[in-house]
Image 1 (cartoon, rainbow over the protein chains, first blue to last red):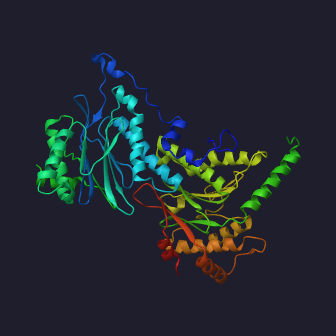
Image 2: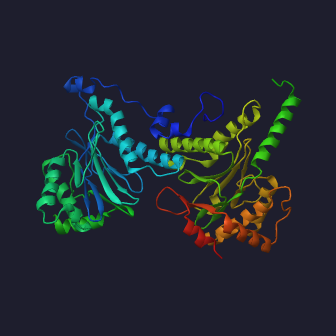
Image 3: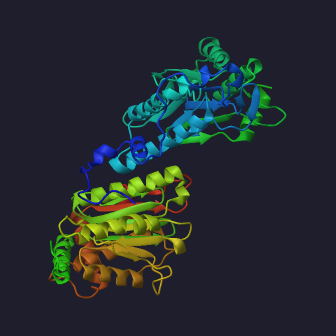
Length: 276
Length: 259
C-alpha cells in the first residue's frame, strides 16, 4: 500500500521524491553502504574471501560516435568464474555503462541507474540532462565507498553517452572508486588489463597513422579487438578473444541514432582478417 | 463528529455532487486499441493530460492538476519500485489500480473531514494482442470500470473518460458501434477524434442527448481542430525497446488526422 492519502504526515511535494535512490531507501529497498572502517581486509589473510571481479573495458570516440568494448571474463583471484560476462550495459537509448570491478555491485548500480533515468523522465516529464546522468552514477559510487574500504565491491566504470540538442556530440567519462568523474576527449580504459589497453590506444592515437577520432567503424573495431587481445596476453584476468570457444568481446557503438550492438559473426570475420 | 449514519450518507452524497460539478467541464479523453498499439487522444489548450506511467502503462486524467499530479507520482513510484525489485514484466496495471490506488481514493473520499481527490483517470496497459489490452477507468471514489475480461458481457477495445456520466456513456456507445480493434493507426486516430467530439458535444446542460449525426460530428471536429491543439500518445505494441510509451509529435498528429 502506498502513502498518498492526504493529511498523513508532512505534505509531499513532487520535487522531493524525484531522486530514485532516495525513494528506494525510503521504502527500504536499497541497502546502505557500511560506514567506512576496517572490514574484510583486516581479517587474517588466510581466511580472506576473494570477490568475483570483471576486467578490462575500453571506450573511445571515433568518426561514427563512441565505441565501447569489454572482454567477457569474470574472475575471483586466479579462478575464472565465468566466460560470458556482459560488462557493457545499456542504461537507456543513448547511454552505456561499462564495468570493471565486482559485478554484483556493478549490475545493481546499473539497474538503479537505469531506473533512475526512467523515473526522472516519467516524473519530471523531461529527459535527464547528460550532466545529471553523470552525477547520478558518481553519487552511486560514493554511496558504495563503505564497501570499497572493506575490500569488497570496488567498481570503476566508464560511462558513455550521446548528447542530443543543439550541439550533438558523444560524451565519454571514466570514474574512480570514490565517484570522481573525469571527462575524456579521446579514450578511456579501466580494469586490470587497462595499462596495456591505454598503451595501445595512446600509440594508435598518436602514431597509428590516423587519430582515433578519424577512424571509421571497421577500423575502430579492429583497434578495440587488438587492444583487448594485447591486454589478455599479459593479464590472466582478461578474456580477450577466446579463439577455441568462439567467445568474442562485447562491442557496442553509440551514435546519434542510438545504441548498436555488433553481431558476433561480424566481429568474428573482422577478427580473422585483421587480428588473428 | 457526525454520529448518525444518515448524516454521513448525506454528507457523502453532497460531496459526490461537489466533485462531479468540479469534474464536469473536463475535456474528454479516448483511448483505443489498434494494430500498432493503444492510442490516447484528447484536445485542449491548457495543460498536458496524457502521461507515461511505466514501460507498458499510460494514464490520461481530468480534474484538479494538484491531485492529478499526486496520483500520477504515486502510480509511477509504485510501478517503478515494483519493476526495480522484480522485473518490468511483473508490473501489473490491475494490481496498481485495485490494490494501491482504489483503497486510498475510497478512504480519502469517505473521510468527510479531509479533502477528496478531484480526479478521474483512464489507464491502459498494452499487450501482445489487442485481445489482451487492458483499459481501466478509476474514479475519485475508488470505483473502477474495466473494458471487459470476465465481468463485462462483451469485451471492449477502448476506454474513455469525460466530465459527465452522460458524455462518457455516449462516447462508449459511439466507440462500441464504430471502433474495430485491429484497424490502422490512421483509422484509430479518426475514430478517437470523432469520439472526442461526441463526448464534447454531450457536456453541459444543453449538451446533446443522443449521438449526433455523422455530419454534425465532422463539423464539430473541423471547427475544434482549427483552434484547439490535439494531444496524442501511443503505447506501441511491437517495439524493440521495452519502453512503449511515445508522445506523438505535432507533425505526426497532423498527418494522421488530416482527411
